[in-house]
Image 1 (cartoon, rainbow over the protein chains, first blue to last red):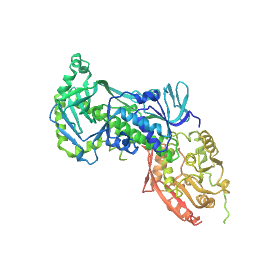
Image 2: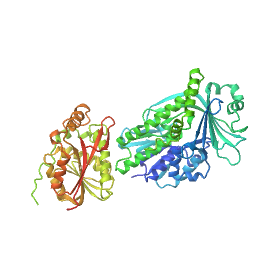
Image 3: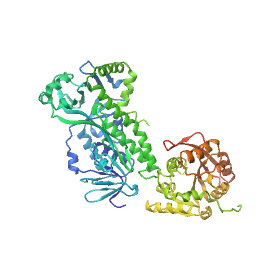
Image 4: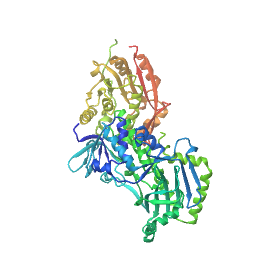
Length: 396
Length: 238
């Protein structure tokens, strides 16, 4: 085969694309990663966000040998307190009730990306095409499918789009999706506070949007990472902008002691979208390229990683049976395996956000009753913990 | 050795397949159910291949059609020969293998054409229910199989269920199998097939039922052999 023919091409060297590449390499299947950036800028990428790694995702990383490379630079989540407004925490999810280990881990995106890139560059099964922008995708004919770039045509049997929320691959492959703008803005920043967090995460629901405070590993100071969702109407208000710290302190309410400092604040508009088809002929979408959900439960990355994990298993099976990477029957069964998990999370996060935002009396009653029922039912709590830990969809 | 009449072993409903030759490799076309069936029969082959790997084995696929089974076996490293009495199907198979860069030996003709060769494995999938003389195919197969060879087959049971599902529903209602593909009177009971194999020098015969879900177009292994079933026979005493 000449240089520009590849069995499997992955578009996008983000966390999902890189992990998928490593999963394929583990099964001794060759892949080629295409990304528009060069190696330097991929390594230097500024991303101050953190990612909540569920137990399920942790197990995938551990199996790939990624976890030990993070060298304890992660913070485990031992408990999650959920409350409506400033009410004393109505539900307490405690990992001790499950015996499956911590509920999740908080890791810096920068660290994950750097670690994944290092591993990828060591693998003989993974080749890389940097600085390669996709101009068009031609997959009318499965036996003659290619990506058009500035200089060359890259032929593929299977194209895996992992190029994120604004996926160019999805656009060029003309895959339709459903989109909803939440009219909410997420403020992402780090805080330091006087008391230790002891691995506690906090989720407080306010009519203007949920506030999540996640524990961060830092040996020098007591640090947490904040994702604060606010209705865009409020977020764009000048008075709110000026009084940002004050407004935040009201919601924070000295949960981990007094607020010492706030880092630089990043703003992200919130929307949800989900593709009607998760593959079109031999182009398949994984991670945020396929669905991007509300960050309310910190599940987007974990959902995407399950896409990668199960797609890798599907492609391994096609190889074991002597089939080509793209096999319609196998891809249909991949779709069947993923559709419930995806639909459930897209809708659950959407409805959770809907339920906890807004201030109608009925909603408020429903919330209070719901939280009460949850707080008293160990079964419900344990089941939802298992679900949120991403252990459900990996059992198969 | 008793003399054998090699004629007309593979002359089955060739006309039906003539008209469909363009569709062999269309996973959404007339052979849709066959393509999804390919997954489970490959799994069955892999699971029951006593030689563990297909790498380097010589495999004969009797009634290979467009080569849907030959190609994956070739990719797994087997030296594959495919034989079919339908000329158009063989031409499709040859073209397709060429496009996919696979070296497969395709022969248009009767089983007698390969009588001078020997094979480690013979596959004969969805064929026995089309032929006039089942006994003859089994007998020739035993001749050309090496010692410890394996014969893999799949066919359809002769039951009320198989009439309802394999013919009435599949061909007329759901139209997932081309009309006129099957004749119920040619369907074979597992015990009948087993007897034929044991009478022809094979000494081990195992049956595995399979189920089809037409709504999901998915096959699964099943305890029951009411409609479709697979089997393998070995000749270790040869």
